[in-house]
Image (cartoon, rainbow, N blue to C red):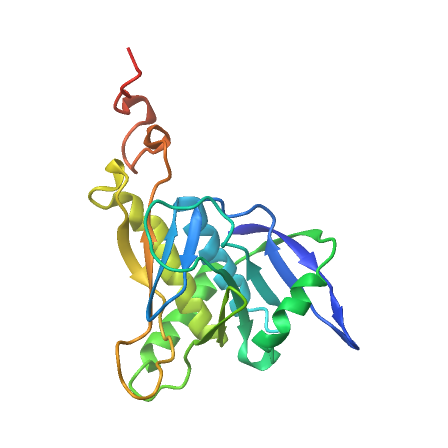
Length: 234
């Protein structure tokens, strides 16, 4: 997949950082913070680009991936606080408490085009699944700060998350009810670290939802010329 990004090189004190964002906003994609269940709603474009962004993050240990989602088009479903998303490797050492300062320092971005390797992503995701047994420590650490949901992980667990988004982008439009505007829960974020002490596990459900007006939406396998007429059509 080819991704168009904006690249930033902000400095905080003596340190220079590399931060990337999508070149175009994911207009019809929203993330509701898990408390303990979160919801990520997206159309095909948003879910597909998130698959690419997680794949890019998997192989970019010295880069912070920032996906602004809290100010996108508000969905008509979902509850709780809408938040942005930040991805970073464990080894980067990003502290959520320092993110607001870093975000304010982003300045002017420069265009960047990258290409992800789906075959490599699938191999590394498969490797993660093979060892994802109870007690496996290769997980996605997560925290919420400054209206931002942070995910810290390794190459393989980010690759597995990329596959979850790719699955949602591919299968979501085929689910029952989506042509009537209903959401379809297709996947979830894998490997989220759970809090000690039990209770309901933390989850982020990945859902496909076409954006209105639904006349633009054609399910896979159906010709665009055979769309149902709208009420305003003759």
